[in-house]
Length: 138
Image 1 (cartoon, rainbow, N blue to C red):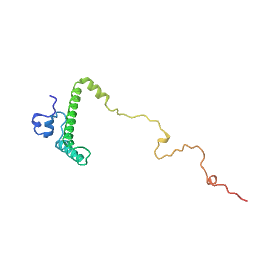
Image 2: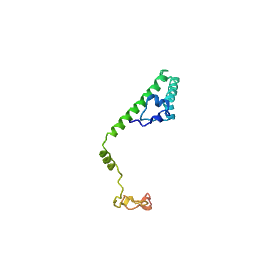
Image 3: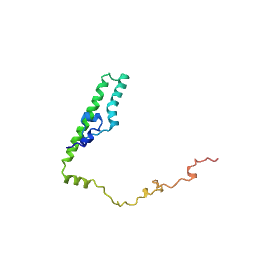
Image 4: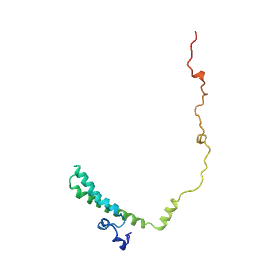
């Protein structure tokens, strides 16, 4: 079977995961707490702030559970489709994804030398006499 959880381990899973019948997504106890009780707490806070009606306290945990179950079903489709890929395609993909290790020949570029400032202006530098405003003598 495709189930990743063994029969012996099934009884130690959180009640939330067992009730939803999750086979590929395996949330832990804290995550199941957040999914169920966290959704209820969020709905109560939203209802107390009068942003939603009190029906949200019942609806929001159901919607969260439906999304978790949908995520499990998508994971099942992905795992099954990956298993259908022939071994030769997997090997070809692994060869394509191997990192290329080596050295690249890079030409020496003047502006890439650290600590050296290269000026692009070719005009001669200004002296104090050139930058001072002219004085009129009478």
